[in-house]
Length: 362
Image 1 (tube, helix red, strand yellow):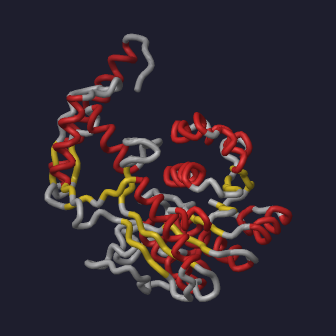
Image 2: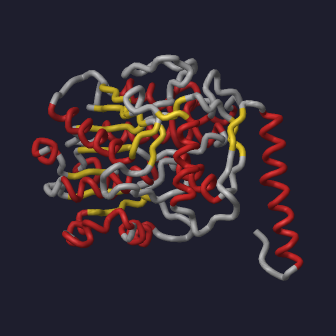
Image 3: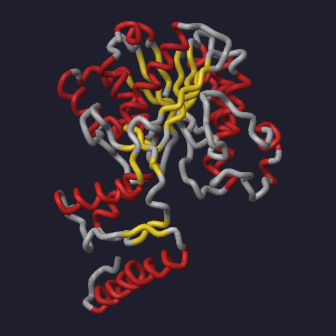
């Protein structure tokens, strides 16, 4: 661990993984000189205020109690991966080029049904802009790109290497105004755009020290910052919560299929150590790390349902609306019937009742 700690000086990195990464660096790598977060204004709230709100997150409680001065190391820089030149002013860009030595790129849209153009702008073109910035950084030691274990979901076996996508990333970016609606054999626009981004990282790896980390479905913390920590309702967390509340009655999937879940602290540890490995073992070759549970700790959808059902009764949510009972089916017609009878119809009836009694509808 000491060798890992010695590597970190100035780090530019905020979503779920980003928060956990910042917390881990502040707590476990005290020699970190500064952490710069590229952040965009949101809903009229400026980046300085967003940073203050970010640092109030419970994930930082241990640091707040033991070393509150560590927060002084966290700086924010206004920017947006969707804008030209990352939305950076010339002064901020020059500062990053002159001072940053380790970069973690995790900014992305994780919506599976995202508009294809938006997915490519954020996940592919945004990655290219980050790589171009890194290309000019005078002190860069390592750039770690956060991809996804499903970027090559069209492959039956995914090795730790970059696969050539069907479409050329540069060609897709150049045609961004007239993108096709299809995403080849990929199940959604997210994995399609991520596969293209990996192609770009591979190309730039000949000029800058890079690594790719491919986490699977990221879930709550295993141990750090504390067991069970999670701060959003996206992905699998939202499914668990809604099943526990009784609002999901049918899930369309094969219950025998394996889920591939990985705790957020495992992902963060992989990011940090992959950056260290890139620095410590200098090489012109790109290193790829699949961060998955795979066959080591497999969980099927059936087991997931049993766990959710058991714990929903053991520790019921205060927002529960119905009994936490749900079923799996691979038949879309059956799924539609279940959804109509046990979700849509009760919702409509409840709204009618609330409206008639003068209360706010759901």
